[in-house]
Length: 99
Image 1 (cartoon, rainbow, N blue to C red):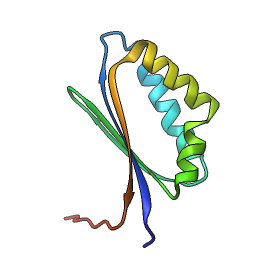
Image 2: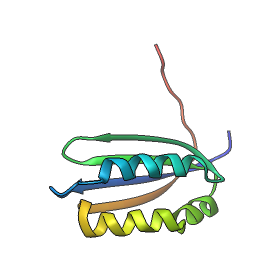
Image 3: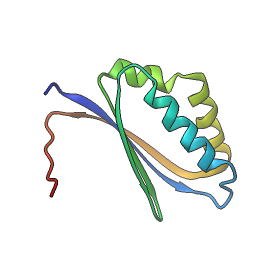
Image 4: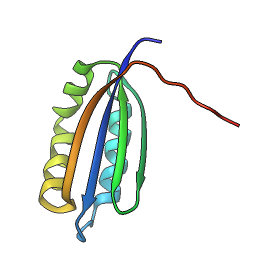
């Protein structure tokens, strides 16, 4: 397997999350259509963690610059998030267990 990249997005939401769920679904569906997209995983409790996987740094850059994604990012900063952090990591190896 060739190395690939993970974008780890951790966040804390504000109390005003009106429209968030719909936008999250829209962004996930849109990301899946982007060249270089591999997979997405997410979980939310006190903090949210979403990890998307990409074939290249270039595919991540193009996703970050997607106009609909830019709109969602702006809305997140203005309304939905009190905090977020993005990490981009190179995945050299992975393995799993599945019973």
